[in-house]
Image (cartoon, rainbow, N blue to C red; front, side, top):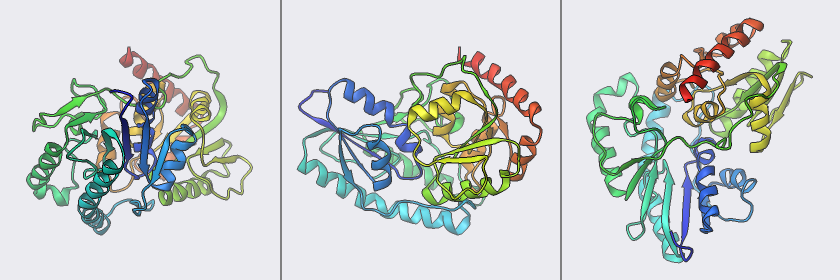
Length: 347
């Protein structure tokens, strides 16, 4: 892409995962001296601005998607579906306005299905070419497929952050039965593309909790885990959320830099996280196993946790997580064995 035109990047504000996987793309564009503009919520802009202070940011005033630690139940999911449908037209209108006022040569939308412009090459990033609906919505699968086919056809290309060969990292999510003609597999996207030191010394009794999801979810996750683990013998760091921890063995890093997180991932004895795709891409890139538990009500995370059970220790809820941590040396050894399998698979 020439230097005379810039790229407009817009990640969905559903936690930090969509923004995190845009980091290697932004690095690549900047290395090619391509001007980059980010259109996103204030929180996502702050997150990226800490890493790329010299690029242009435009705040999206749309209220971001949110859910609590209880996840996305029936009524919450229906509400989210209705909100996403409503946002399609408003996102397209806002994108067209931005393109009319600026000299963009490329639009990249991470999971914002309406953020495109007919006059500019528009790319949608998604690892879910065919999402897995909850069981009570399976009857609507044909309707969902038609809806998504229409969405995909409106974009110039669909970039899939996964390997082309099945199962890749996302299995049937990124390798659907229904062919998507404009899909292009670009490989996993991780902020840890520079790698993690495999010889880093692990800190005994150290636990890293990677909080993910929208702000409300991350805060509730941090608070509940802090209360649950405050009387254990582990030294705990929570990355991605800030909370009022009363225990001396718990510290929080609300806005950990990539370098801080890279160091924590390399040196922590145990890592705990949800089973979100962006987090799993980071952990796999780092060659680290973890105790993972799917967000309640999210079939995507439930599927990914099952898909990667060979490389991660999966628990269904926080009580199961506590039971695993109480095993101390046993859980560390279990994670190390899974890391050996993961590193062999990555060769």
